[in-house]
Length: 305
Image (cartoon, rainbow, N blue to C red):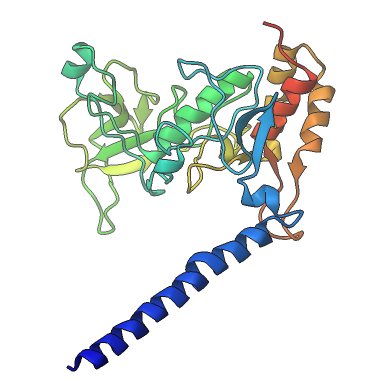
């Protein structure tokens, strides 16, 4: 290639680089930034930040925990829905648990490691989705002073699931149980059900394989419509959901009113001011933004230290 052609080709490439850099690297970002400054859009473009006393508290688009250093719910605040994003609402660990609805059998902890002082998680315990929901519902029930029972949950807050062992029919169903084990209740606990079809129910022993039995969830006597709503016991897909349902908010009114020494009607008035309807009237569900409610409560009904 002649030197003149070499220079011409590369000069054309440099010019194209400069033009595209000006368009995509300067002009386009500038236009987008200017559009974001339009009234009504600027707040969203800046992250929908909420502040109190001149300090940034958070974003109305990202949830956060309202707990003490030990992870216990602070009674004066409305509680958010559960989150499995990192230690809770971590934008860098956004995601779901990925447990499927059929996840009903726990992975037990090693008793020897528990005896050595390890936590249940460090000792290998992995709760199923069912047990996770059951334990959360029981905890919310205790916190709010309501019935936290749910179908297919034991009174102790784990999945009510049996492994029924015995001869089976052509469809795989056990005909005559010879042994029945409560798979989610280790042997330091009494089984939630004493008998199943006349067979004594055993507690689960660590290391034994109960998959040879038919896995049978037991519905129990809990109401079909639990007092504790679904969003109080399940995490969102992102783990960052800032809102809760009006039903979950209503459940917390009495506790928050008591902690702030005001009437429940005063708390409900604040909730009403921070309640959003369906987008465009038909998309999504009505919701309450937890951070906005708690900030307004701190402003109007502060808790004396």
